[in-house]
Amino acid sequence: MTQEKAYKLLAIQEGISNSEAKSMIDRGLVYVGNKKVMIARGDLSVDTTFKVEKVEKIKPIFENSDLIVVDKPAFVNSDEIERQFKGAQLLHRLDRETSGVLMLVKNEEFREKAIMEFKKDRVYKEYIAWVEGIISEPVEIDKPILTTKKNNRATSNVSSKGKPARTEVTPDIVSANKTKVRCIIHHGRTHQIRTHLRYIEHPIVGDEQYGGRRAKRVMLHAYKVRILGMEFTAPEPKAFISFE
Image (cartoon, rainbow, N blue to C red; front, top):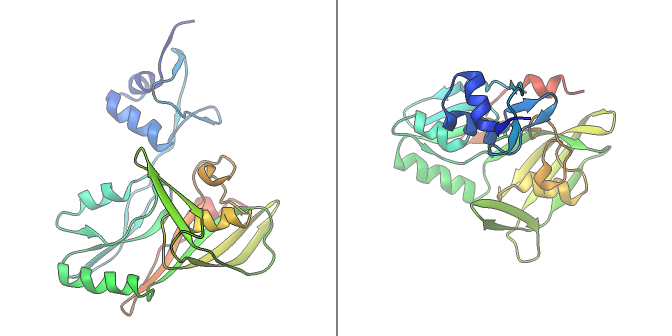
């Protein structure tokens, strides 16, 4: 049976460049049947048919002379969004498969003010997540987090050597053996919600890095942010509402 690299076959099927095809696979957007194609350079049969998930568009939420706020779709890197808004700078980041409120600043004066709010833990950050197992009552996880980087990939763990981190988790809906929860975070460490939910043995659905089952995406959404007297909300994605 004749075989070829997955990204080359996808490029031919979709009529796109090899680099675009490789990027789509790396983002986690490409499937054969119900299985995600994990390795762009893996060999597949030349008669393989791919199914490609479409990335939703970036939706504007708010803009003034200091700030741009958008609803970031899943599968888009925060840095890519920054490049689309010339002269604006990311105030914070969301992981690639996390959707929701993302803020960019337009001037240094506002950036410094906003960063001080983050440092003093005066920014309200509320997320929605679908997690493995049943959470029947609110839980607070107050455990320090240590983040290490290897090959440009960050991994976080609960560790006494880490920095303070606190996450408030409130159950919303229980469906089969999973729960939709609201998470309010304090401090905001790298992968804080993902790390804390794994620590209490309720990893996020789709978050294979932290023990969740495979799904089309990491089921984590930045729902609401309040900063300097302003409040921004990104509606819950359709995938979250229909996930029950």
